[in-house]
Amino acid sequence: MKKMKNIFHKNHAAASVIETIIATAIVFAVLLLFFTSIRNLYHVHVREDIDLQVKCNDIIEMFLSSPGRSTTFIKNWEDEIDGSDILAGSLGFAATPTIEYGTFRDDAGDIDTTVLYNEPSAGSLISSCFLLGTQVVTGDETYKNIEDVIVGDIVKSYDLDTDSIVNRKVVDVFHHFPEEMTPYYLVVNDFLKVTPNHLLFHEDHWIYFDDISVGDVINNVVIYSVDKVFEQMPTYNLEIEGDHNYFVCLSNDVLLVHNDDSEMNPWVSTHKDSYVNSIRSFGGDYYVEYTYKDGGTDQGLYEIKSKSNYPYTVIDYDKIMKYQNGEVEYATAKEILGLVSTFNTIYDLYDFHVTITGESGIILDGYGASYKDAQVVVSTTRNVLIYHPPRLGNDFDYVTDDPPDENIIPPYYEIGQIIVRMFF
Image (cartoon, rainbow, N blue to C red; front, side, top):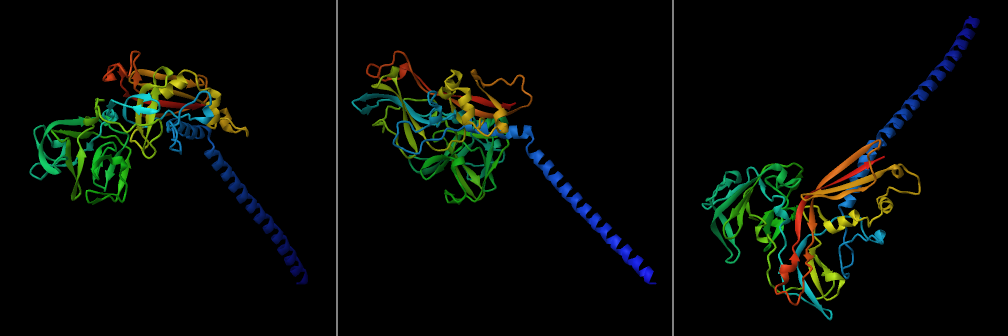
């Protein structure tokens, strides 16, 4: 009996050792599985094609930006591409929208202007419209879906001169294809569907729908939601005789909207007094950019430009030409874009290539390295408006030209596209 107890104790001790070994093995197996999973997870996140695409998206946003300066007491608020000192400037192609432009003469520091021009309708290139089902207020104060409105219908309009609501005739209707609208539309208060570039009357002036925010009160309507839907759909608009505006329904209320940007298109001489009285920034929401004739200092063109957000990405033709003409070294651009480092990261192996095309053809014919023999290539594409600034003709003279618009090449926009490729 005593021997049996000893054997039992010995077997029990042996079993304890075996159990300990098994438990330890299980722990090691679990740890091994854990670390293997973490390693695989890490590798998923550093897949080169995904990492390359992320960097490509980042770079195109940098090219499409051109932040303004913080100070208002400088001649040119918008950052410029300076080939001689690119680190002090900006790589971005983007331009701020031109509100007005005209000619000037600088007489001992006093700027004399005689001709101004209204802004061009960039919005006319990309339709500003409403989506299917938008209700328009008719002359008998009922509602009619915008897609059902026809020429000759009577709608409610607003006479700004007499501050009164009047009946006006529809003189034209516009049905636009999806590709003619902005990249996204807005849904206001879960009801009204409209492109962000459409004009809305608010506090005695016109604003874009893209400018409204949750909490705004517009025509006694509280805005409680503004959602972006990144989908292009058929859109509709109307042209109204006389006042060029009409009312649309927003749930149980109505909003006054502009029928088009037609009043701002084309550039038309207005011959009005200007507030351009010195070579300085306006501060606030506007600034002035000056272009002197032939490098002189006494006459030329000016543009009044806006610092506010715009519902399109507008890029500047002159900035693009800085790259096309080789004024920006590729190695320097790579450094600014974070593709060169002192830590020998994977980004050091990446290269990029930029192409910009417009309605007139190829504008930037492949800036950067060649991707012909690259192992992996990814790309990001954005639709843009390309702004061509006004130009002075060779025979322009502020003094003899009255008005001097015959020797001015007016500015214009063209629809374009930018493609950034990243590769290694």
